[in-house]
Length: 267
Ligand SMILES: NC(=O)c1ccc[n+]([C@@H]2O[C@H](COP(=O)([O-])OP(=O)(O)OC[C@H]3O[C@@H](n4cnc5c(N)ncnc54)[C@H](O)[C@@H]3O)[C@@H](O)[C@H]2O)c1
Image 1 (cartoon, helix red, strand yellow):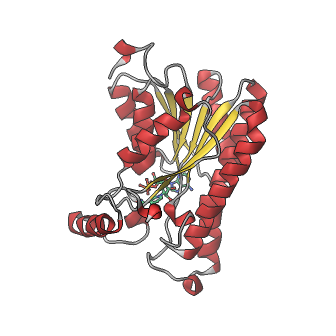
Image 2 (spheres, helix red, strand yellow):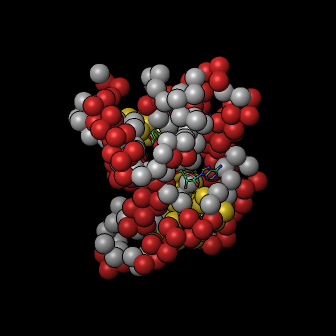
Image 3 (cartoon, protein in one colour):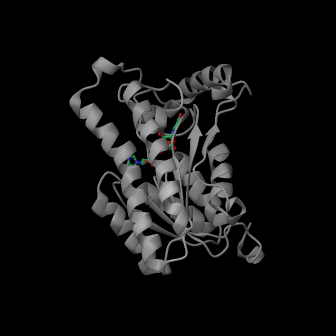
């Protein structure tokens, strides 16, 4: 879809900040938001990766801005939002999507070092805290409300994917609900998507799983066996839910933790 259809798209006129837009769910969602008419500030700790995302957005005839941002640093998050406001005048949407996996995938509770614990909490929980806080401050400065979408996980709903990782995602879920309630009087909505296993993003290799088609095919097979619908989850599955939840079509939906899991937690 190109600018030709402007005026009828789901996110026309919106300014969206997407954290972790350098790959996986973040990149796919940033591109979908742009395709739906949003101007997108694509932020990531990996500036080169996020520049690539913006090149793809611009190649499709849409508007994006690449920003370097480590979400565990509140100053970085505040600066990313300030860059969006400088460039586009305000923000309407923030997608706090960054999450890092359990280091050395399969690590059990007692094998987490203090540094492992601190990094998981600082990025997965701290990053969402920083994003929610700085977005709420900006929404209140500009007035009129705003939309927050966080990425949780089925790992925050059932025990899966690592004890500390899962606990950080449970914290993201609880923060989402609290922000939804605190924000409601200001027309600030907050929801979360909770994906299950996505072997085709960068996440598995970030967790130490071997890269390559064979390893991913094996992980996808295992995911398919675990999910009642029989398929691994994709970044596209998450992006479609994200477009809806941040759009005005979901104007009366807040505090929701939406599993994107092929029925995994319903079992
Ligand atoms: N892949 C899965 O199986 C799975 C399952 C459930 C939930 N999730 C969650 O989905 C979200 C997206 O994961 P993904 O699968 O797309 O992973 P990914 O590794 O492909 O993408 C993560 C992105 O975040 C960036 N990033 C990492 N640390 C950062 C930091 N400190 N500051 C800013 N950016 C940083 C990376 O550079 C990368 O571009 C995460 O929150 C993850 O926890 C993933």
